[in-house]
Image 1 (cartoon, rainbow, N blue to C red):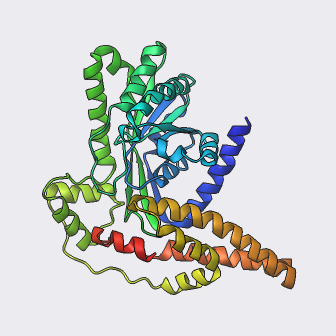
Image 2 (cartoon, rainbow, N blue to C red):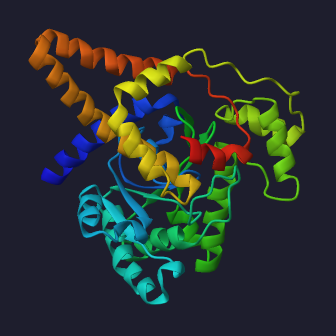
Length: 360
């Protein structure tokens, strides 16, 4: 019970933070989320640990997560992650000896699903900013079919979830979370051999993910198609529209980026958040994977700005009274909200990713 209360508090705090961090969060297919029973959410993975935050804060089911084991190295961080229903999954790159630890994790997953709870997995196995659905690993199928084998009365629905960002690692972010059709797994498991069941489930999930997110086939034409879409300033979060452009090869002509008329507010926000800003400037230089920029920027700035604004409001209230302190806090939050909601989210060339990472 205490863990659930703690999770709900953190969940609410993160949901509020993502609202301030995002230009727009578009959620589609929420009717496809089963209201009860065992569910495994199979999610594509373009943008680091912020991906599960967007998924879990846009559905009402309390999720357990499988994330890469490297996130659990620090003992303190490990305790915090475990308290929020996160569990490590080990890969070959973590060391062959570590792979044996996965069996204990799989047993935990079997029990979670048997209780009718939900599990979130990223079956591509790693994150990548490319706008392509990559081949899926069979790890998630082992969990599904292992649970079905152990619990004969269990049905598990697999719900593919597509995440598409207008520009991963950009601020403010604009994102679409798209829930697909639930896939019943008991019939697949009982009607086929294990090997065939694995292939069928992987194909069903992969096929849906390619329509639930923007998918450009990762071949020799990938960069050309992406550049044309970027030049046309398409809204990548309009998934069906963009995928139709790709399939029909009907990409619009080049357009100019929209002018950001609220950019002066950014400098006002920086001045008002000078300590969190310099903290972020120090941390971002140490980020060696572009996919983690959003994760660290959101977490560091949301927690530090919340603390800093509250502290500054308290100081203002000491000198000028509680009413002035309250108005300072309200206006500070309002300025951030205006900037995030009215900054145009232009389509940006992927060649700008590294430059963006260094500058912001």
